[in-house]
Length: 635
Image (cartoon, rainbow, N blue to C red; front, side):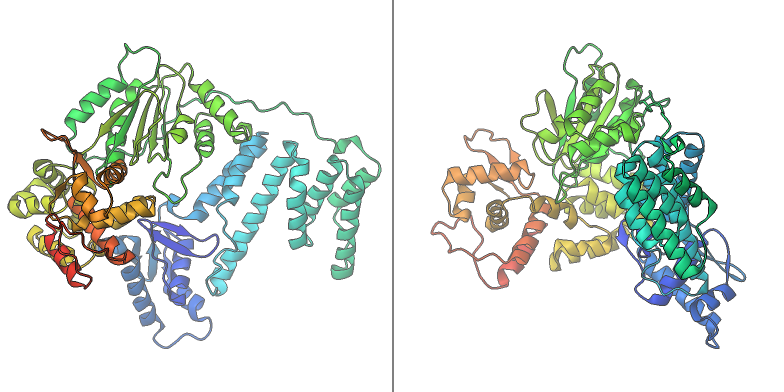
């Protein structure tokens, strides 16, 4: 769960936005969240929601609202609802871990920043306070009608934001960033028209930037505003600052502070995600990969292991499990980044280089602004170290190249759906879907051997229906774990009926969202290759050659072969051994076939004229009957 208060109030569960749409539900949940882990009495909730005009059945109405909250927030796992929102004798309590609500994180970062500032560590103070302020997305609880209780919280949060902003600008001034903060301070004093502290900092920043006349003018504007609108003079601190400006007192000049240099991190970076406790199979791959990464006899080039495979085959899980298995061989740290290769816009290598440098102990203010300098600094840090770098979901060889360490004792693990052509020294491992036995083992590890052994035929059929994709099997296992009374056979029937009558995206309602993982890769294909992928459905046989595909695509065999190779690079088709034939053979995975069918229905491409030689094709029919026949072919 993730609760966001600093801006529009929102709640995310497992990455899904489940923020209640009803105003009163948001209002009640916001109160419980801001007073998390303590009992909120019914009277306080009634006063917040209805003020001095509560209905006669206010308590009953609150009970109904709390029931609705539990139902909306945890529709998928009802048991989690009662753990999160607990009923007490006189009210309710929301059990929220500190790291799951942005207010708590904000307050911790501000406290750390204040401590650093008091210890004269302006650089660290600026980093903590900047991170805290970045959590604000606008006025707190902006989308909630606040009663008296929430209004008090909003006022407190705004005061906390201003205090954090005041300390962060103080850290900037201590670091000599006078010119950089002038524009920000002008905007702040325009909003905080009577805040003498911000006006004083603007005066000081202007003076230290050689603009003393503007600093004195800032004082006159503040004084005139206070006298005319409030009938008071500025405070003593601002008056003393004005007199010092008039006399050009040397006390206003910045103290000469030594630059805070990057120091070695006391604790090596350990950025790997949590290992998967029920990781299954892949024994041959793991033995080979571990030996490759930890070979102490290697000379020169560092080992780079690329893990590839179709969406859902378990590349990230394998990379993380492998990294944990070899981490003791890399005592100087483990760095991890998700590069977003399947996102609409992959992350920039420069951003991840900065992330790595900060993880290695470099102060945020010392991270170079230039991308090339960041890459060079990362190579310098790793030159004499034994570190492991894991790059998940890489977009290109260039993106990976910029993040490679330089030390001979280092190693790199990369996952990607696309080939990393042009990356020297890379060794590629292709992960295939599980066979029936390994798929059954994975289900047994998640659900328990006894539950799977009670319905072995159903378990095996689930594995076959999902084509042995570990991601699909893991999602199914998690879904069944949430319903311990559900039989595997009953779930299999629901799964089969869903696949036969509905598109692949409908599986998200049974906890099996494969569509999103496939769609991100599909969008990266060219329109020409998207069309080719859809039209492969028209082939009668599961295995086919480029000549067979050419008849569907209405192109020559060479053009068809090139299209199939591009689809194979993106793992939309699989390449089989040619055997005794001179031609490559290709195959569409069962899940890919279902996805292609949904793309065909969604994208609504025009149906080409049927070629004369149709022995390898399904009959082309422009009516919906074509869809029905394609659905019938699905396993």
